[in-house]
Length: 113
Image (cartoon, rainbow, N blue to C red; front, side, top):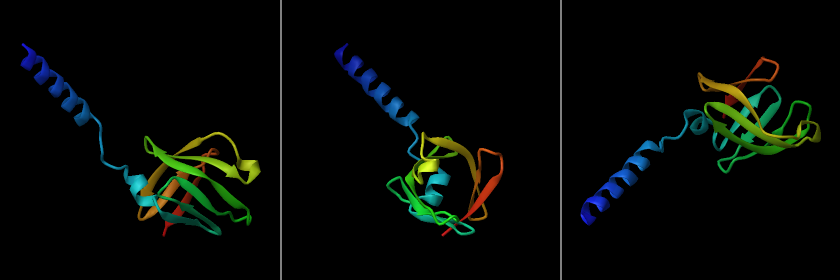
């Protein structure tokens, strides 16, 4: 009886682990540690989740980024006018580029360098 309980416990633990995917998100793989360029905007999406760069307006941008359910999520701390809670936007990869749909519905296409 005791060995049956131990076997069932082990089976449940293995099943729970198998249900958790360890496959990295393709969006995350494509941008992690890379520079994203759209016109005069250059952002570096650090592998540690840091987001830094320079906007076309010459403002310095800083914050964090992550991919959640296929969305580009970012929390900005600078410039102050963009600082605030996390914003998640639809995103897709297309021909080596990251396309992010802004809050106004317009896409921004970043070359991934």
